[in-house]
Image (tube, rainbow, N blue to C red; front, side, top):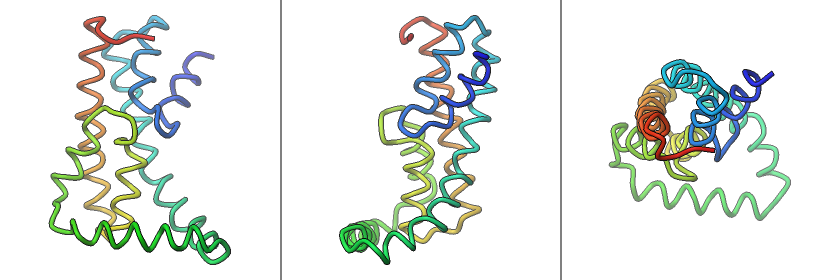
Length: 145
């Protein structure tokens, strides 16, 4: 049962690795196992986010004017930072703070019109970086649930 909980926490937006790795360690799993399982599960958030953005956002934008205005505003803001590279995206996702996970990285890539495969690789690298940081802090007992 706890395995499913750890898996689900790994793919919940805004919690992701920051909650899943410490939860798995507290549940009695080895830190190495927790790292591997949680990072792999969190990588599933990338295609989930792109699919949601592709299929759910366009109809909502057509029906809700506020969402359309927010979307256009976001695209204009992202266009100012088009020079940010995939390395920047990976580092953004790799910082284990709220709102910097795989879902937000996918949203940034979507708004910026980045190539999906390259963006997915950068986001994956960021997930691994965040996983290593959270794993190290959790294994040392600095963060816990």
